[in-house]
Image 1 (tube, one colour):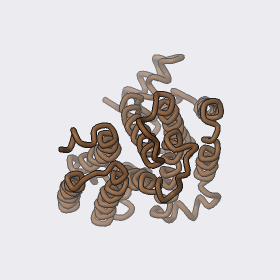
Image 2: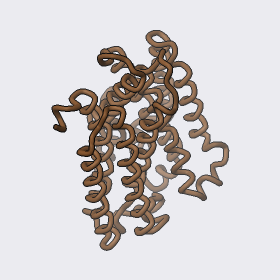
Image 3: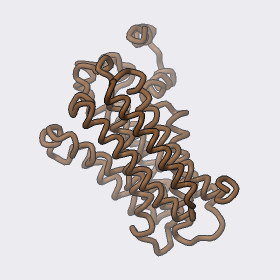
Length: 318
């Protein structure tokens, strides 16, 4: 039934905002992505604010600027993937919005340029010092879009490809936290733990969503379960969950987190370990989808718990 839906939409000829509503629903759900980005940006600003030693809490301007900055970067990453994957999508996944003609690459490119321009304008108007981290992140984003000028070399090395593309996450975290620390003498020593958390969350999510049961593998779609096999892919996912827990513990230290929080992180990792082992032993659809879901929940917990620590450090955990 899902394969017939795009055909019906195309023949019905959705126009204007309806096309974009369908596109976001299929490729960049605004509600679910918005909630995740809100938690990420909120935690980033709070972290930058506290790490820089500022009193009280950040205001609405800092929070909104961080949220919009993050939202644009994640939207740009989705748009870049549409360009990168267009040839493979047209061949193997014609049901996706761009290959079936719902939206055009040129339209997406124009939207991306407009969003980036608005992002830069808002930063210059409200917080000029954000220009440097923004430029650094844009520069890395352009290099990613060009596959660092070695596309074949990277494609032949999926592990390096993964790390090189997830390396933009610490830069996005730097931009997201900037409204909290701009104007204060802070450096990598203070911001490093949160940037590390963004990197490990990105790795965990990317590996988790590309582990599939044999029945769910698609021709022309490279997954880590097909590239590396189940034991290696699951082992790397479990390692990424452990790395995320460690990075979250380091980041939460800024909020004076106690042993209870460390115990929660350890419990989360142990549950992930059990899930990974079950899937490696018996790779079924349910376990594969559970790994993807847990990867997303792990990210929400990592950033959401930082927000709770910042706002309610004693009431929530005591």
